[in-house]
Amino acid sequence: MSLPPLVEPAESLTVEEVVRYSRHLIIPEYGMAGQKRLKNAKVLCVGAGGLGSPALMYLAAAGVGTLGIVEFDTVDVSNLQRQIIHGQSDIGKSKAESARETVREINPLINVFLHEVRLDSSNVMDLFSQYDLIVDGTDNFATRYLVNDAAVLLGKPYIWGSIYRFEGQASVFWSEYGPCYRCLYPEPPPPGMVPSCAEGGVLGVLCASIGSIQVNQSFNRHW
Amino acid sequence: MTYDALEMSYRTLKIRKDPNCALCGPNPTVTELIDYEAFCGSISVEAADAAAGSTITATDLKQKLDERAAGKRDFLLVDVREPGEYEIVNIPGAILIPKGRILDGSALAEMPHDKPIILHCKSGVRSAECLAALKGAGFADATHVAGGVLAWVNQVEPEKPTY
Picture (cartoon, rainbow over the protein chains, first blue to last red):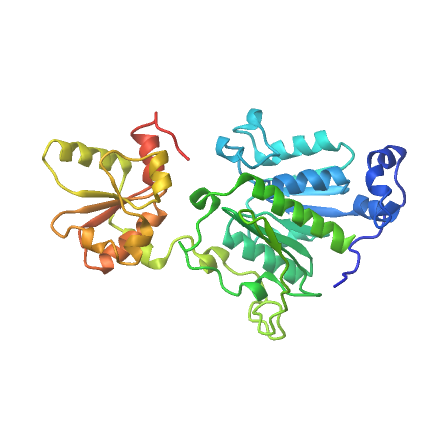
């Protein structure tokens, strides 16, 4: 199903931007129009962990004009097996800060805003309303339902992704045009039923598979 | 879309809107944000109830293990994690009985009624669930270790790895 474009194209691209994004610009389906829309787009990534790492890096490299990062955690050495946006020298640092440094190194032409808070009912509506699209890289069911409900209540599309051991799932949820997360999963699993990454483990490279599908979905369907 | 990294297979599934969806259906019952911690629950009510008053610390456990070694106390220390986790790091003197075998009842026959049982896992969540199952099965003298093996390494054997 084709969805309407989320954002209007920016007026123009600078010479620097044309050079940087040239391998996108010469794809006929993408072109100047697609790149100008990306430039105007504001994408909020919830979490700079397993899924957020590749998602943020590819969103930044592609030239999404404004990236927001919601993350309150600090980098731990056990994150580095899969959270490739962070490195050895970032251990102990704020993940949001560390993610911003990597993103800036990849592409200094975009705006990056940090939201170093734990996403909850008191801040989610205000945060989401500042962005066009949400990328959900959360690692727990409470935040996942929070993201879904806020997105539905605000009429915002979001790209959900989830990973466990060797398996991953991803989908666009935009309730105006299709199902929401609750249509798929009306009830959360009972407490203790589903282990977290810390309990159950996760294949590092699976994060790249699912995180990049999330980025791909955000490009295909909306710009 | 689902992806299986072992089989290297992608599947695209068609998901339809649920006409009875509590949030985006025509007759929603969820019309504003709710309490998500309560909705999802990090620990079940049964586990929280079982753990109340039946929780010891890692340093308590160390003392009890020392007393057991000196012949002044007897109890069974059960690690309810998975074998791979036990291999990474374990508490000396613990026997491994994974959570699934306690919850499905198959391990209950191996549990003693004549001495106390102490359970531990990685962080204290799984052991609380097992504690509820044991208490439900009539093992009154059972406790679990708050913070699990992570607390043990942190407080008792800091030279061991965490995971």
